[in-house]
Image (tube, rainbow, N blue to C red; front, top):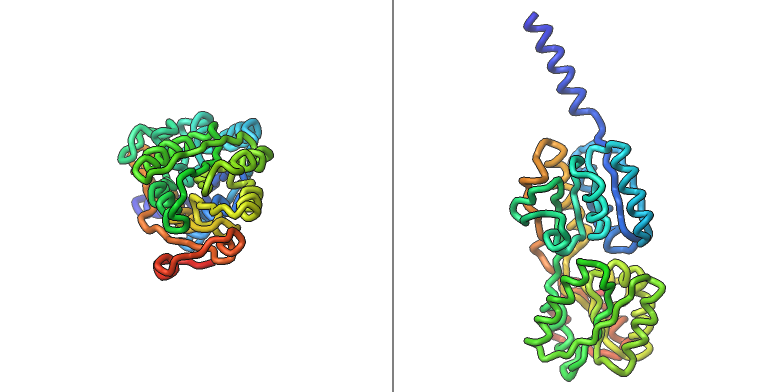
Length: 310
């Protein structure tokens, strides 16, 4: 009898080990940084031998679509949800308080109302933050354009992650002696108009990790190239696309870090007691071709210090 019970227990254990996890992935909009985070997440699970069935859906920056996607994932009773970017995380957290949610590319999970504390979330949400060194990013402008005094920031005032970064930029601007000119775009279709409104008013432009603006980044790049204005970005993928430079995180590696957290959750760790994680390594990324198109000379000290040169 004992042997039979042991065999049954072993069969149950093995069946649990081989059962594929059903993972839902919800993403606010398609752009390279968020896509890289998603790829990193999937690659990490695959590399660690996790068998998973993925349901991936992208809301293309439409909030009603985002709510529909979140509701469907909850109705499907997936084992875990990966929510990419702050709006996706907020909508998903409202849709369920029981299914584990792992977030990535969320600037400030506490400010966004997703967790009670970074060290002990206290909710069904945990994951990684893409908090950027906004002060160091703005400081780059002085090295590219020492006489710059007026800095334009294009962002969506409806994205809490962007509002957090703008507040950080305000504090940094006081120390750096900048005057900020803030313009908001609530939709990707309005990003180019927002950039145009800065013509003749600023010496440089900064775009934080704002999902709306980054999704339409090419329009900002075109404006900056035409007007010979340096464009500093909040993340590296934007530099690859044509922004001048950034000091920022690697979203692919952030996704892998998030994937490792998801594995721990699938293996029994509780989101409410799993601390929010941050990426510690920052890269100085410079786009030499973008510098030429924007009429900017790159100081040798920056070229020597750059981690990545596009």
